Length: 295
Image 1 (cartoon, rainbow, N blue to C red):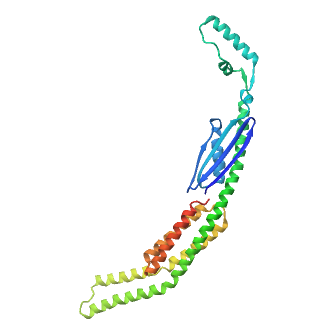
Image 2 (cartoon, rainbow, N blue to C red):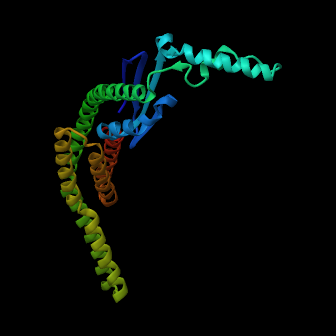
Image 3 (cartoon, one colour):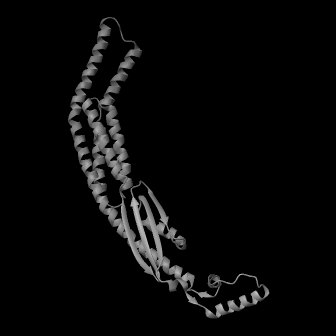
């Protein structure tokens, strides 16, 4: 299911923004866009997402922005800077042609710029990111749940239509049986006529006739497929009404729907039943497309 959520917060002098975007996909596929300073957060974030999201192609993007230049610079250690200047003076006395030390070089020298302990700053940043992820995920789940309700209603509407089609096939079974019996009588009369003219059926021909009769009987009997379709429709309604993460279970159930519809179409003894079987397959495929978007 599709969804979008964004959350913002501050961690010290850093402004944080965490953005989640998801689109439809059959399985969970998560991509991260994180600053290098937050690479350690990728695995915990992946676990948080997997705990609440089961399907969809999801992107997690985190951006950082320093709001206070002084906080970025830290405190200047003037004693260390003076010691560095004295070392440069003594070095230039030996190497007069050496390039002078720039302010940038001096600030990068260890001890000249005093920062807050990196471990503490990193821990504060990670804590803020994880907190943002929790709230953004909650919002994303709510958005996806609202879309899921719409998809569920659409699936139930198609299921109701499918139920009508199943009920429409049942009255056609006596007609299919009548036509089957008429075809059987025709074949038996042909066999009797052959015997009356002295063209007795040999064992091979008789076996072939019995085989065709058995095949026709099997093709005519679609009551079992209709019964299973009715049972599957009841299970589909139960699953949708139960809510929660039912997408994969519905996907499997609709495979069974499709199997029964295919069998019904192959065994159809009437053009009308064939048309209904094709309509069933269309409705089932539409439900499968929607189900693949459900959580």
